Amino acid sequence: MAASAKTLTHEKPNPTEDWTIVLPRRGKQRRNLVKPRTPQQEQTWVPTDNEVNPDRESKLMQKMQVCMKKLESSEFFCNFMDQIRTPQISDHISRVLGSEPKMQMVMYGIGSIETYEPPRMQLSLAILTKKRFSWIGDVEVFDPVISGTETRVLETLGCSVLSVNEHGRRKASKPTFFYMPHCEAELYDNLLHANWRVDMLNRIVLFGNSFERYEEYVSLLKNSTVVSLRKHLLAVRRFTKEFGIKMVSDDYYRALHDLSWHFFSFDPDMELQFGKMMELVDSYSETA
Image (tube, rainbow, N blue to C red; front, side, top):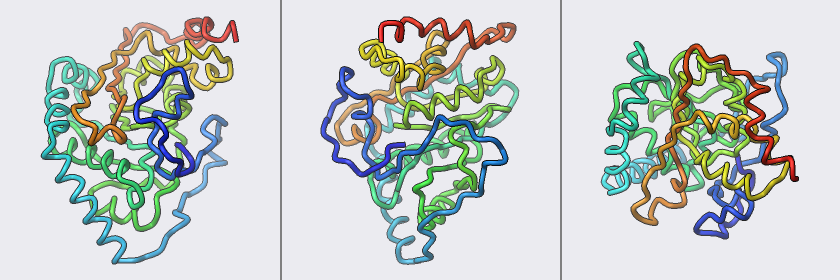
């Protein structure tokens, strides 16, 4: 995720500039999301700030409650709920679920909910959505900037914080809802790479940055390095059903702009061949 607490210099994204301008500045530290990690390299993660402070926890819980109440009563949230109930979205969710009654929610890159409002808004949306829909199961959360205080508040809110940084490489061995608003493109690519099989991609519901916007951005940039960091994302676009969410006011723009639902639709008998799929993105890099 984005690393430092930079000032947001653009209120609206400009696809001709660096894509990172569409990301909210949430005090996150940039991580190496591309280099593969072997199981032997994985280490137990613990917060760098693991202070036990009941006063901090109480204040953060109050902030979350205020945020959830504000969001739940908004026109944006009403529209968001209505969209999920439409056949466009609900039919795809049913297909992913198959015979399973629920799917786990995995939330990557939540950021510092204690320091910044956009992460609180994104977390609030996830928690409220889970409350409204019985098909959402347990919620797992990870971001390396999460503090001990934030961990305890997240647990109080019904989430569990992962003890290992998966770098987005969770395999969808069962239906899984990946909730990844405003993550870096490399994190989405890691997720797709880890699930580069027809059966796994068909088990994924992904809520995050618009893949269509990424494709538009890369086609304008014509940069081979940028393409290499997004090659799975670009290759899968052809098999992706994407539904953007509707923004009805600027109140939630910074936290929730340019987000979409993504569903991957493959014939179960189709063999996902990485080499052939990569041919789909050659045109982006050949002139770089």
